[in-house]
Image 1 (cartoon, helix red, strand yellow):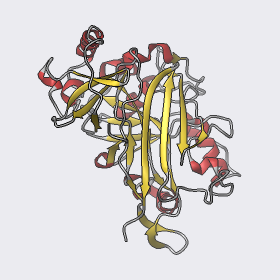
Image 2: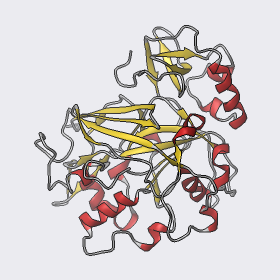
Image 3: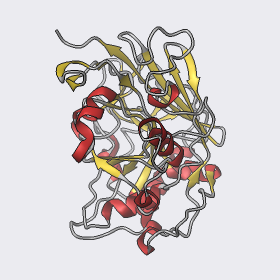
Image 4: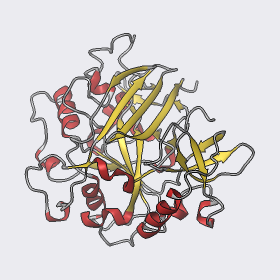
Length: 369
């Protein structure tokens, strides 16, 4: 079993999809069942592929149909000695900034005399376009990036390497350029969710982010879990989202409750340091999708968009080291630094209404000489 993107004990309710390679065999699509993988490659050509993209493009009716088929196959033999691979080819990647707690805490750290949230933050889901080519599957080592940062400025390895605990949403069905997607069409386009770590070089980010926002401080790597959990598996996890004040613009209003009762856990170097709750995230996934397309941007199969850092109000519910250490002022107990060291393994795990959502992990490698 590949150590990084492992098959955990998924049980038989979630039935997440992924791409795996059995020993000596080519990559193909499978579903995680209990502690093994159900091979789907002989059922249909869309599953005899090295990615989920062909299946994702089929749309909601096909997703529902094949989930019902898989449920009739759960007692078939499972593969257990496998390598779990990147589940889909990422088309575009967008990262949002949707936790009011996270945004407010960051404001307190850097702008303590300003209001915790700027007025426009509650009027639209703030986000930025990331680099799809550096999205990697769980278990992929992460090389410490280099960049320009203060003091100096000088070019060198980041001294403030950070993590961000996030949830990602995977688009299946695309749209033509110039069209929009409403909040009510969310389930027709988004197939499922992954766990996501938006690795961040905070010193590089802080030097470059004004006036144009994140660039090299974010672009070097984003890790996702190896298994995509279908939205259909999350019915019991849906809850009412936080009350939004002011009332969102018409294109952002949502008639369905799409808050998600997801309990996340951040582990660094074998120590659990935080348990962020996703249910309090201010902007929901349908609203993010509607805003993403509201200017006419097309969707493509394999698009990935992320929630932004998930943080709760408690000191042990913060979703990144920037918050947990108050920008380095308060190192975590038992650690020599406030940021990630070379050799640190970071693991994000989660459950949704008690059901497993898997994990995403990565180990920090030293910067290149």
